[in-house]
Picture 1 (cartoon, rainbow, N blue to C red):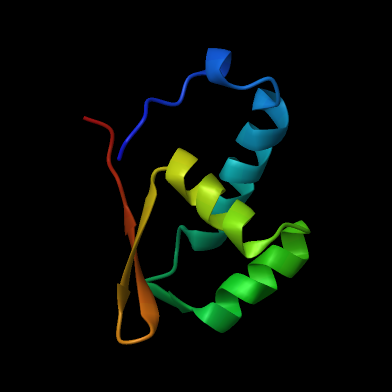
Picture 2: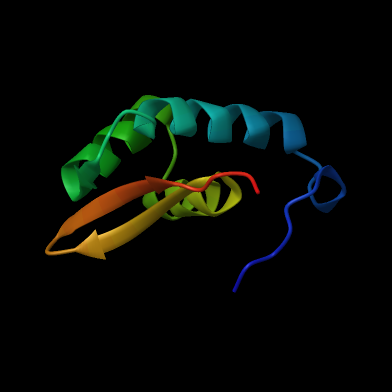
Length: 78
């Protein structure tokens, strides 16, 4: 399910936006990532795996799990 993410929906917008942007920068040049990559990013950003996937939902990054790897796609603004 897709929900519109707007600042009114969150009191922690600035923190979230910062994290989303950090995540986007980490994933921007990658074609695919593994669970180990995700664990490393979670450690770097000091977040849990569920928080990681919450941030992914808010970002323009789409992950598709195939054969134990996540294919990274950037959603373009239309």
